[in-house]
Length: 374
Image 1 (cartoon, one colour):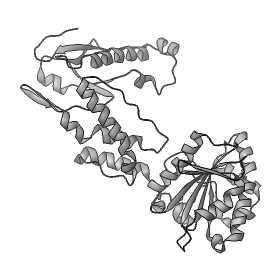
Image 2: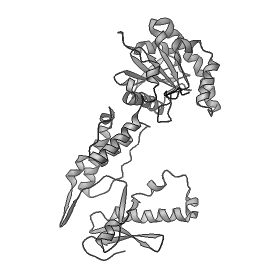
Image 3: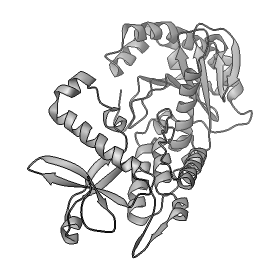
Image 4: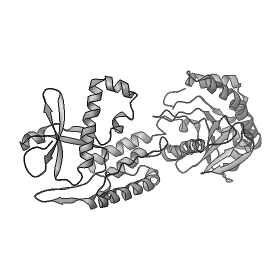
């Protein structure tokens, strides 16, 4: 559901309204948001909604402020497609519940719950400075189980006592549902886009809330890899992985524009110094003996590993072989990538020329004399 400038969500109400609602009504509202929900998902809602209502009812009976608490189910993170199962807005805290129909937690479950809490903490305007707690709920478990990687693991029957324990003992504010559900309250992607634009316009990368500190270890690892590759005159492929919202884009932006690359600048006799780069692609210049024509040509993009061409595709090997245009592109990129990867330190540069109307060919040109070498 979206109301005006609100984010999308399945259910939102006070604790008291939620615990009094018919489970069927709650499920219908969730289906309004996710009409293509699987039968397994619907069964999970039918199982977990009454459990949640029982725990919320116990909080309402124990806390005088609970009438002001809010329960939000299937909150869709704006600009993304991820949805934490349940978000509870309570006194001085935001509690994120991720429910799993099992009796024990896996590391993947822990990582998912932690990522939701981290992203709200870093990117939601009203969660900045708030205690945001991640709770994984194996719905077949009982009692409070453990804290793992900062994530509380507890069965449904322990949620009421855990929610009360996670709140500070002193009087403090409660985030209002209207403010929390504002469509512009959660905004990681526009901030990253603006930062990238400013980077290319002004040469400086702004801090993106708390994400910079969380990406420092990855950028430092990349720095060490780059320095070792420069020392040994080798090439390295660095794969950055992480859950959605972990900061992979920011790691990439920081790494490819890092100031430590300035330490690796190489002076070339009679020519401008070469500043090394961290990259996955190169733009080849068109071969020509005329400098003006060469500079005015459009670059030919070559990815340094064919896996980067096929990794996101759905085409199988046999289908690719039958698609002449695609297969030609793969062969062409493989040749170019092989030349780029194996000419490190050699006195040649890789260019391309056009043979006929549509055929492109890579070539190795001696860097300091005219002529051509195949």
